[in-house]
Image (cartoon, rainbow, N blue to C red; front, side):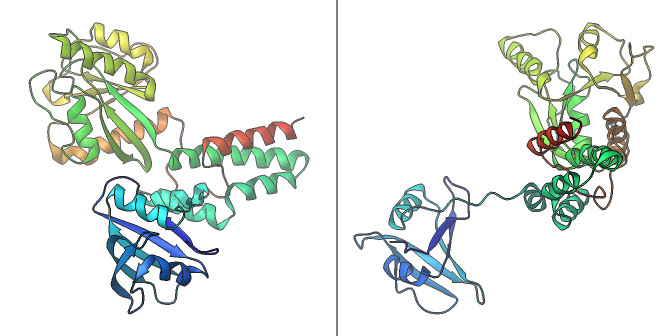
Length: 347
């Protein structure tokens, strides 16, 4: 029924919802809609009935015109049953065309640095332009271009794909309070009683211009019941998710929990500096940053300190304000292809 050149595409996420929006495009759309809708004509917005193939009414919907555009929308009830019936009536919904990484980043950007990178990569041709440009070069010029592209890609990937940071430590070390300061909101439950965090709590933030996914975990130590045992097991499993931030109560002595976790930590965050300073130093060469999270007004300073420490640990420059200076790989797949191309140049 959809018509040879009519295209029906579901714009809202699949599943239950209050409202579902179906986009209709194509030169044959009017013929398709004449069979699908009862009383489809009229003004830019009109209440219509949506019909099944046998003429039964599926739903009442809004038919929304977009003046000057070769498209319209049907706004239906978001019931999965309604959507399944409409999908059958139109011969199936069209799959959304895959957007390139720069376009996806443009849609999903959560910070000005990400937006600037997306706009830059779209303007300069993105990854295809990078590959094409490298193929045109030879000798030292190509080697220099490959090195520059690697540097741009390091920063571009860090801007485009949030790194996961897992907050771990003993019970009551201040992990959840640290998460709340970094998130600028009371995301995790905090208090004097140990064991308030059971399941990992996740939050997206931007620190020093780079995006992160923070994971707050249950504190490690003596388990008092089966729930504690399961919560601490999930903490140990979360260690494999990304960069580990070992959160240590700076007013307490260094203990067994810290000793076991520090080999896996990229950064130690010494908290509760307002309570006094226990005499310990971080073993090995793990960087340490000291913060006080007691006052929510200190959130800006906490974010700046942790963000700067993470930037240095990851070997990243200051987050650029206007892109990375040329085409770069934005995804892991693009970076693998770029490295394969670079190895080919090297023979």
